[in-house]
Image (cartoon, rainbow, N blue to C red):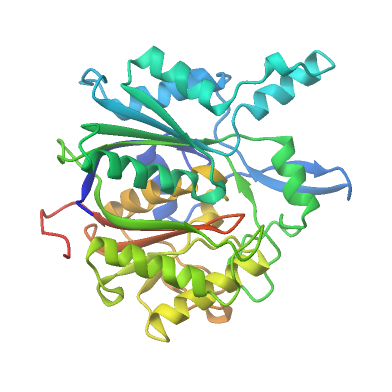
Length: 374
């Protein structure tokens, strides 16, 4: 794959109201303030990592996010594709509306395609494209954007992803016994007890040229569905291993050249086991540095491909990545001490979703102008 540049980016999440603030909080190991919701069936509380409450509608928040990403010197967008990736749609607003009017009308609901079309018309994008592939939605958005730029169909692409608080998602994960009763988000811990959901809004501008201050280069990636199961991927890690291999091949890199792997790490039993096995198939016992972001950010579902990638890249520019306090017990060799890596390190970022849709990205941060591996 011909590399594309992540020219500009924006992130609103539980760690901060902009990308730099969130990255500084992560780099310092600060925990986000968590709210609570009640599981109806069990009458038990669960944690949720909310972004700052601004009183904006979803449309207003997405407009502000795009404006922040494009910057003050934004050009006309008639050469730019809009890619909107999410699993949440406008469910949060619809739930509030249904509650206030004591009922539901199908006319109240806005599909993801309609949201993307409205954004395209307001901002003047050349076209709009939508994706909902569970946890890989935003990662796939990056891959599709890069592919269409490489094909010459668009000069630029803006990938936008969001995950809003939703009672349906909260209660659904609770009913599946996937949300953490303890509130301790501990991916790859032998006694992990599930995930903590998080809210996020993220976007990035992709282009063939680096722009004024590029964040990174997307060198390659791969995405595929594991059709062996309706809901998950093979726990032996074989499909995950294959997806990572294909991602590396598309970037012209070897596993040994990767300096850090951003793990998906949901802290659910099957997903962590599958990823652990896939990593051991790829690396054996000699692994590169490993990074986790969900304990600080929450699991931002369809937005995690962007929220975690942007947060990781900006954090590497600021200093060491935080360690976990259970490294000695973990299924994988996680860092017990903060990890210092060069901002232009070669990274493999994993996103393995519900339904067995698995994606890996190969990314290199920008700071020296050195050539990526080929």
